Structure formats: C-alpha cells, structure tokens
Length: 261
Image 1 (cartoon, rainbow, N blue to C red):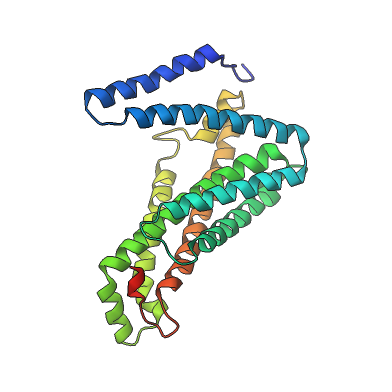
Image 2 (image 1 turned 30 degrees about the vertical axis):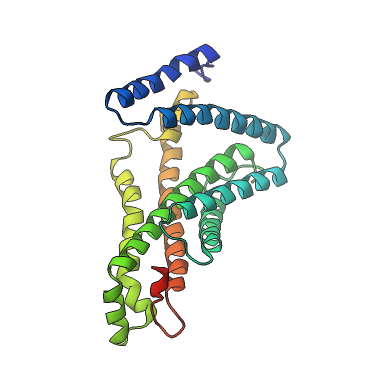
C-alpha cells in the first residue's frame, strides 16, 4: 500500500463527533468547557485549512523568499505565545524571546537541513517548513516553561538570592541554582520523551510517514533525527531565554530588582 487515503468532508464530520463526546463529558461533569471546546473545534478547522492553502501555494511556488517569510511569521507567533505564558511581564521580554527562539531555531535548522537531511535545494519547503515548525514549537514551550519556573523561584527564593549576593557572590553566581532548576524543568519533558519514544507512543512524524506509505525503517530514521534535533533545540531555547531574562532582574551593581518580582 502506498500513498495517503484521502478524507472527505463527511469523514471529517465523523471525526468531529469525537469532540461531541468531550462536550458530553464536560456537560455531565459540569466542567464548563463546552463553549471553549466549540470555539476550539471551529478554530482548528479554519486555522488548519488556511495553513494548508498557504502551504500548498508556497510548495507550488517553490521560492526561497516565500519560505523565509513563512519562517519569520512562525517565529513571530511563537515569540508572542512564549511571552504570553509568563505570569508577569519582563522589560524587553519580546526581544529576549525573539532572540532565544531565533538563534535556537536557526542553529538547529541549519545543521539538520545543511548537514543531516541535505535537501536540494536547501530551502525545499517540503522539508524546511515542517522541520522548522517542530523546532520552533518545542523551543517555544521549553522557553516558556523555563521562564515561568524562573519567575516563580525568584519570587519564592528572593531572600536566598539576596543572601548570596550579600555574601559576595556575583549576580550570575547568586541566581545559578535558580537557573539550573528552570532549565531542568524545561528539559524534563524532552528527556522523558526520549526515554519512552517508540515504546509508549509512536511520534507524530513517524506516524505521518507510515500513513503516507513510507517504509517503517525510513520513518524511524527520520524520527531519530527529529528526537535529537528537538533535544538540542529545547536546550538552546530555554538556556538562551533564561540567561537573557535573568539579567533583567539584576542591576549592574549585582543587586536584585525586587520590583519586577
């Protein structure tokens, strides 16, 4: 069997009944999620259909500048999403998030496309856009998790940080335990995923390739590349975000800016 089985609109309608089951559970348990589920279902259909139309046009045009434009839009949306998850805004947080996500995504994507996969041309949309999307999505999540943990720890452990500063530690040394905890919190989901991939679940890219008719062994090789690239992307994204963000909480005189907490 090769190729992908096409799905008609009535088949998608049958899939929508699955959301109806969730709505029924929400009603039965008085969760109050019915409106959000309905809006979410509609947005899922509309957003994915629009993205499909845009990607079809980009794939057909096959121009490098359209690919770069798509990547820039994706990065901007990911930046906003990462920032919106922080409990309290940080001065210059958009630039911090944009820098962290852009560098981590660009570095990882350049290596995977230029060294590992090596499509010709290098900007082949079929490869660059999906891979960049996976990298951005995971970098965004890890950066948001790291930032949220850092903020929470700075608030609850601010006296500890100030005590370390009073003992003569530099600002970087005083917050290092908090930075380490934030990075661990951001990396744990990725590490856990690496431990159970292929055993507990078949990942999305591997499943998609198998459904498209690719050999399971070919799909597995691509999935291995994906797992490794997401590991480095989440590490770089969270590290850059935390390092840049923590500097906003410290003065040049190595004092903690309590008013930001």
